[in-house]
Image (cartoon, rainbow, N blue to C red):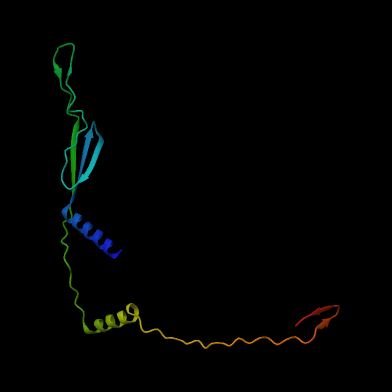
Length: 138
C-alpha cells in the first residue's frame, strides 16, 4: 500500500512539473470538444471539411465564415521543488529522541500478571426459609 501511494505521489509531482495542456475547440461560440494532454492538440468539429455552398444567383462559391477556433491553456508549475534542511539544536534533538522513543517505538509495556482465581463451589443449602406463605431457597 505504501509503495502504491509513493508511486502515485511521484507521478503527481512529475506531471505537475512537466505541465498539462487543455485544448478546446469552439464552434459558433460554444465549446464542442475539449481534451487534456501533454502537448497541444488541434481539434476539429468537421465544419471546415464541408463543401462550399454554391449560390444559385451568382453561381459563385460562398465559403462560410471562419466560425471555428481552437483555444489552448497550458498549466505549468513554476515553483522549484527543493528540499529544505532544518537546523536542529541540542534541546530539540533531545526532545525528538524522547518523543520517537516514547510514541513511535513505544516503551516496553508493563506486563501485569493476573493471579489465577481458584473456582470455589457455593455451599449447599440445608433447609428452606419460609416467608409468610412463600418459600425461597437462599
